[in-house]
View 1 (cartoon, rainbow, N blue to C red):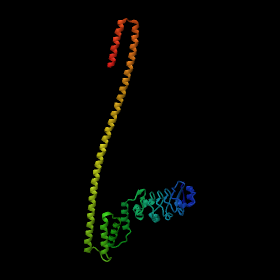
View 2 (spheres, helix red, strand yellow):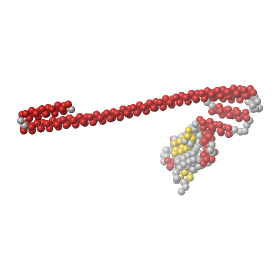
View 3 (cartoon, rainbow, N blue to C red):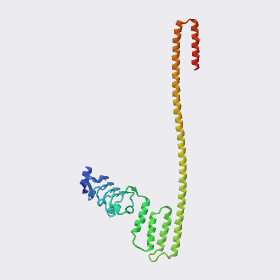
View 4 (tube, rainbow, N blue to C red):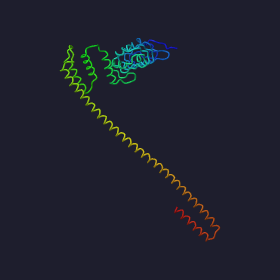
Length: 322
């Protein structure tokens, strides 16, 4: 049985989440994933009162549009995973959200229809930090700027394109690249009057070559720094490997010492048991000798008694030596 498709209303949200608070503007987070019984197809005006909402989960529904979220100016996280949004045009209302940081549009038809949706969204939403569960990196932003800034340009003459490309590179430049690019832009502004091509302007070309040479030297310097850093990393890795090997050797030595200590403890315990058994045997022997002596006194003459004493003394001497 197919799920019921509904249009979102405030009352439905209250009933679904059992909200009893009179002021919906105090709600900071909403989770409204679809179920087998019901799926949201349109947002309508159901979110109009959630003016301080920061997180909204609408995953696993049947949304074909996100019309109705544009007034959520404090929204930072929006999950549209596994819906029915057909194209990027339906997402343009999200560009009006000033603080949106995380967006998930995976498993929507638009992702198959437009493979370039990720750089498009990154370009249109510069404050986005996470898209489809993956962080938005600087490389993503540079690719988006390069692609969609150039695609949106009208067909103009070559020098205008040069100026635009330089401005794009200026936006993405960092560190030592910033100054040469500023110089190049200033040079173009100085010589370009919108009338004739700069291809035959020797003054412009000579100065441009100097600026580009400066950029090349900066690149060479950066490459040298990178090479030096790589060497330092290799050296640190070697030291770390040596330390790790040393720690392994120390652990093995300590393990051997511990095993030897266990063996010594067992031998000491065995020696103690043997000594205790020896003492017990001596006591039993002395007791038997006394009993034998008493019996001999009753039945033997004096000489035999003396011989018995000598024998006893001999046995005692032997045991003492033991």
